[in-house]
Image (cartoon, rainbow, N blue to C red; front, top):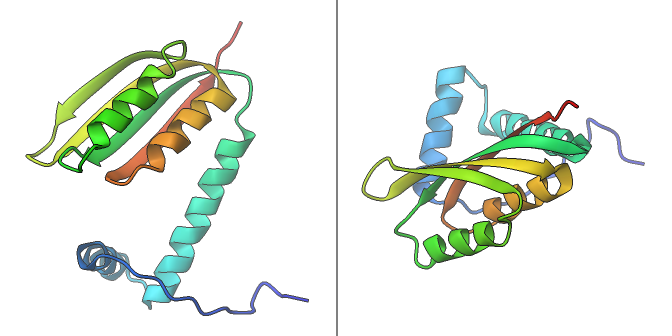
Length: 140
């Protein structure tokens, strides 16, 4: 039997710049250890995933995505994904943040399962730094 306070050790590999940014945030927020920050980040990820899992029915949604447009082949993959969902995607706005980084905002309307599927497919691409999905129910 496993208890909530039983600890497991894991090893992960991270790019140095990502770890440096994470450590800066931990210091700023006053975390006592990197482990505590990672536990907090995992809890937040789980909460967000559970919230996404509970979204059902017809929804209006917004996906906000940040990505590296210099990442080889990424632009074509993102375009292909969006073209596969023309019946749900209403509009998109693309903005260049820097030489390498872009932000894209995608407005969607349709079945929550399909909207979540789009967000998860975008999220899974290498070179995509973040994807945030926000939805609201469509009222009759």
